[in-house]
Image (cartoon, rainbow, N blue to C red; front, side, top):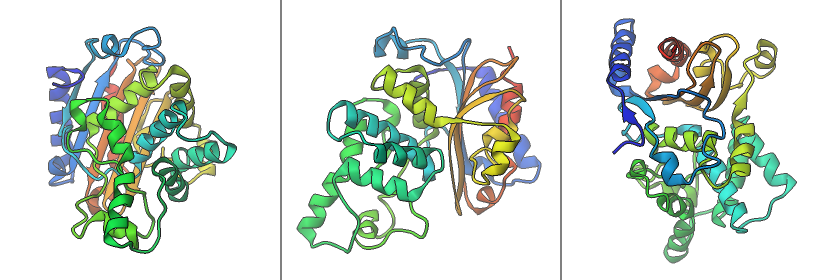
Length: 309
């Protein structure tokens, strides 16, 4: 059962949108795309502070998805999950807070640094990259790298079925023990669905995960400027070519994008003047999607229009 109540009208809007995008010159997009879209009657920020988790998730959230349950390679969107894991580890005193850790988190989320992500994954798992290991040592190393997956499983969310959060992110790809850990057919790659990603982002925005102070810190990392000057100063701003580019003037955006040669993804929570707050996660796979900077902004613009009260 989804963590939101499916809204037939929203579902029809998504189906019409995907069909229109295909007819406009993107054949086969329906199979390459996953979308999860939720709308809220009021701001989601901090909404769960005074509720226990059961009460919060029992609220009648409304939304719709297109292939929202499909597990896809998430590219850098996985960094939002590592960000949450760091806050959980800190709360449990499993790692120590430090200026270096906070810098790594900022560079991992705001700038999508793969180097910072590697540091964070090593810290969370107690592992390091390096040459291939003997079989027994490799098994022990691999078990350590499953610690984040083990933590996620404690949430008992149905959306976690089939998900995998254990790999670093790369520029040129893994080598040594990291390549072995991927599996000969890359079967151990990271995997996320847009439904699961939407639920994580909703929990962070509403302060329904770990603790309200932890969620506030994560929201600070996720917030992005839509001002033209700030975007021009940062060519990799995770707004242009992604959902943020298609938002109405005056919007506020919290997001984490992912982009590589085979994918263009984004996960965003939006508050826009004259619109209901909404949460939108889009995963698009394949070289044609990766090279299409207009796809995600177009989706955001049309669904923002459909989020008017």
